[in-house]
Length: 110
Image 1 (spheres, helix red, strand yellow):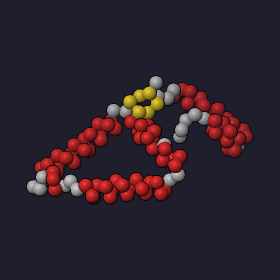
Image 2 (cartoon, rainbow, N blue to C red):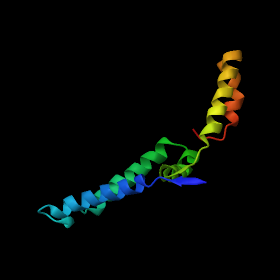
Image 3 (cartoon, one colour):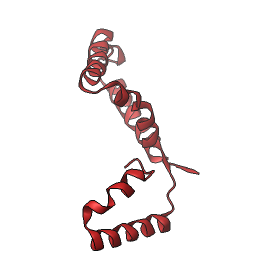
Image 4 (cartoon, rainbow, N blue to C red):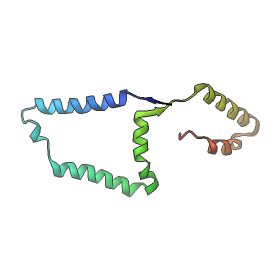
């Protein structure tokens, strides 16, 4: 089961709302701030920079990363603590390199 993070969408709506409110209250009006070529240069240039910087597999994961910023999976904290306890026992006994295989098999994306 996944838990919705309600604060992220609320924060986005508030930020956009405050920006539009401030623009509407200004003397020049909303039309003064709308410039399609500038928007295309900013958004298109940013997207092109992402494509130049990262490989295709990383770019394909952008939608899932955006989704994870709003909807986070619920984690059983007791199981997570038990998992860390087991890993710490192995580290204490055999050293840090002994847990490489267990860490690689973990399902947590972080």
